[in-house]
Length: 428
Ligand code: AMP
Ligand code: GLY
Image (cartoon, rainbow, N blue to C red):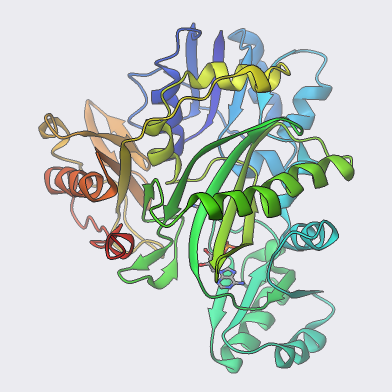
């Protein structure tokens, strides 16, 4: 099968790495890709938001299956586009626009959860014509205030503050379009929940599903979960505090009701449902839904799947998901993100990356995120540059191996959090 993977981050490098091990793969194409993917397939310089250009590529390369890595093309309707296309007939891993709305609109997701009795924080929502009402509504919540831009904001659209003045300013900036442009012109204000967070993933066709290994990511830039939210600074899998009892609750109270809720609402879904959960007391609450795999969670989840990922995706798209046998690896994985100095604010690109040939002997994988090749050298090309995934018998050993990778690889101004996994190791 000829496969096209859309995306350019560490998540897509991990997907490409895993697909390249499939006996079903004839050729792998990645667009727009990054500097680490050239050995795994053909890297095509495509704008993934230009669906007609993607369609031309699909025809030219006789692509049979396309995997959409990131949310933006899904929310913009790439799966709908290909379903309607008379020029191509391909399988698409990723939901159509209606299903992607679970990620594309926080308000839609909250209303969906309320409708289907799925546990989540109490909320209210307002649009740009309701600034005064939004400010007044702050008084109906206890600080800290949680304010979310409704639309896509690359993981950065949530502001949590104890200060009412800052909350008011945030509402003003979001609703006026100053912060997050269109994505902020509607907001959700919600109750602050306190507990440990974790992510669960289900590959689903809207009726059957397979749970992928769970993960915990580290969203904030600073150690001890401080500072600005980022796309994610590290991840671990499995999650030591995810007990069997909690998993049962998550399945029965969140995951199954979500899949059934989609079906009741007449919303088809074929792809990965990502559940951002928080454990409050001993109960799961949904913080957010995503309509695709997480980044950097994918860099720890896929190394823990033994079975053929392309076979999983092909089964998903051909109605054979329930017959697929998902085999996971008990061994743990941890990933540490090496980021550019200044990220998630402004940063420089084009720093030479060194040490990639010195990692032999360390149990793990180096996944590229923001990298670029030029004349056989590798350079930084983004905020999150490399995902250094260590493996081990348990999370502690896996974390040690990721930091051993981080000692070998680097570039000018490289930054990583030194405390990935530390909070859960304290539990052991
Ligand atoms: P989101 O983009 O919705 O996942 O939010 C980003 C981060 O903000 C989450 O990972 C949480 O750490 C935090 N967060 C979001 N909503 C809440 C909430 N209701 N209570 C506490 N923390 C939250
Ligand atoms: N790591 C969180 C996300 O992919 O949205």
